[in-house]
Image (cartoon, rainbow, N blue to C red):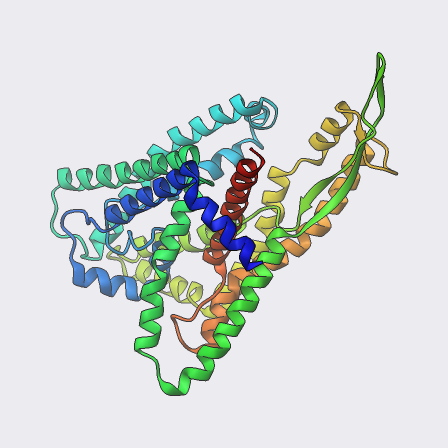
Length: 425
């Protein structure tokens, strides 16, 4: 196994095309890290550090920007606006049949047009998110006394930073290996690991060494479980009918339709985080209103939402429900049944058409149940780890783990495909 690994590694660095792609990705990531360290004008560093140390909402957002938000850098929004735009466009396919046909039926040209709409929607979303975040931070005294023009300039700067990141991600997709947006999110998450590890070990109490060792073992088992569930699928056998054209016979081939256990990916967790954390942001805005009644109500609501048990129960429930919802949006049994019937394929023992759609719906409902329970457990796992260990920096699970595992698996598959193609040549 190790010999095969080293052989492939040597081939990666010897092949000029693969080496060029990897160096291109590293160059883009280096540019991203430089941008994440450049702050916008007027930042109060001491107030900023104190604010992030006690705010769960911005702490979670900071993970996905690779520390760019914690620095209030020019790339503080990360690729969040683009992800939000993509999710909105996916949801709009349920409302507008034209968008659904564009995405599912018009092939590569339709998807390119669909992605272009997502890019255009990113700009106003970045402006709104940038304005909201900067206004909230200004109320906390983190930004100095800025004029209206200076605040507008800051909004334009962070919007341009988000659009630049979106463009860099697409460059990685086109000239590098893997999905560029996922690679940037992965880089942002991994960039925070050295600081978390150093913070844990430099403040380590010798009595906590057994807890650290137990955490390492648990982390290995959890990552292995995430890999197994992420790669898990339910194969549905599909057979193509035999057709005779002239003197040749076509079809008669048996294959399978892979239905993934985790069909929705990390999207349900992102949806649930938005539902849970957005009200906290609104309530934080309302708490700044000089009214005793409003401040009392907002304080009570914040205490309720910040309760660990309430937060964990709501989080798990929302992730579970959104997994079914997003799977229903992206997986259409009737469309798949229709495409199978048009191509002369059928599931053995199942009639084409409506019966096939019902059969696929029954299977996807069962596999989605396991995927929803898995995502819910992974989502609340960091809260459970903190409660058990009592150490804030010891957390494994959540969206970050799913993204890291998914990106690593996808990148490995892409690289292996490139290696196989070159070995064949």
